Image 1 (cartoon, rainbow, N blue to C red):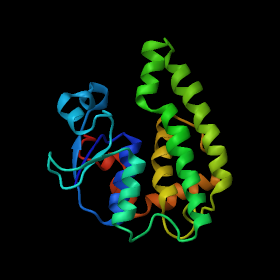
Image 2 (cartoon, rainbow, N blue to C red):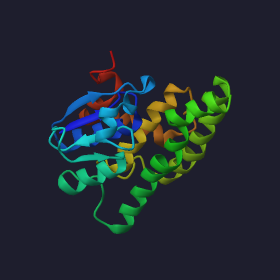
Image 3 (cartoon, rainbow, N blue to C red):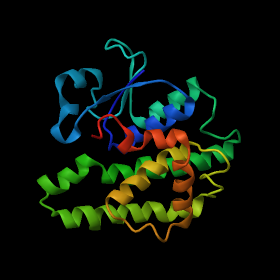
Image 4 (cartoon, one colour):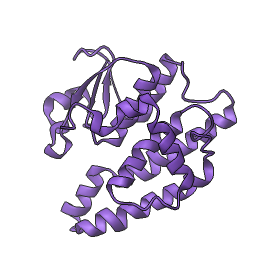
Length: 213
């Protein structure tokens, strides 16, 4: 497999974690988002959405390309079911998905790079307003609910990491990057600590990626 991404992309970070947890070997291709490499014609031919991540199933340019991180995670869960990212019971599966969707559908879309650049370049907002007032507002709105929803035992929903953890850890990483106060979120911090002690999560952290240098 070939994963097109960027080391600081939290969506690509999710996919790296899942691939590592599933034991799937993959090659990475880095696209510098701030330089617009994800909008190049050759990449747009692979991924018409012009976003990262994208996953080429065999690494060949002519192969099937999957995009949107949550769709890729669902694919990996279906094709590589062991170890599972979702529990067996339908109610528990819905609870796990709810936390994952809180991050992937509510927090992340409002705080991703293209939105922040639009606020700055198109709407004339200053860095302090964007990086603190805006970014922190949406983190707090999401993290308040997540803190009440997870067990931290030691992972979000029990003894093994799953989909919620895969989504949460990259979002916590970004929260730290933007100097968001995590002190009120005891369970979120405990889950982060448990995850980062796991080899699959450690391999996926941005600083450990080939394009981080």
